Image 1 (spheres, rainbow, N blue to C red):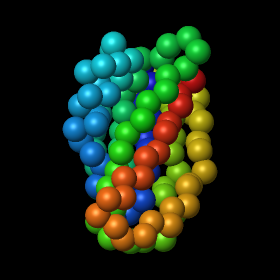
Image 2 (cartoon, helix red, strand yellow; image 1 turned 120 degrees about the horizontal axis):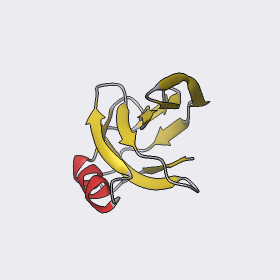
Image 3 (tube, rainbow, N blue to C red; image 1 turned 90 degrees about the vertical axis):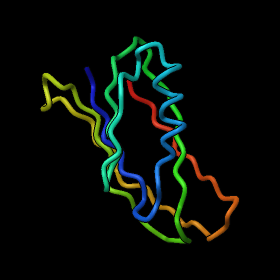
Image 4 (spheres, one colour; image 1 turned 45 degrees about the vertical axis):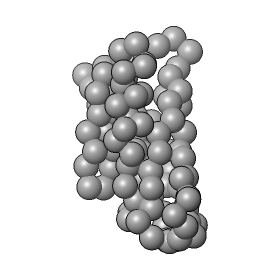
Length: 106
């Protein structure tokens, strides 16, 4: 099992309905998830060729922020990990805004 820890920008809420759909439609690629105050944790079963998924987060207000680094590692071998650098976001306050972040795990 692989674990992906993804850092959304502070002040943004992860859309849990989208994550429920991801888990339901992944064919066990995404086993389950945890939404923590500072990051999203996805539990993945690796597939040859990688896994691509999309989730949404909604900002509570306009912000200019940098996320925490994102990490992907093997549950049974946590030393074998990949770290992605933080991402920068500049979000204008708007009720229609639905920024998305795509994560590909290989």
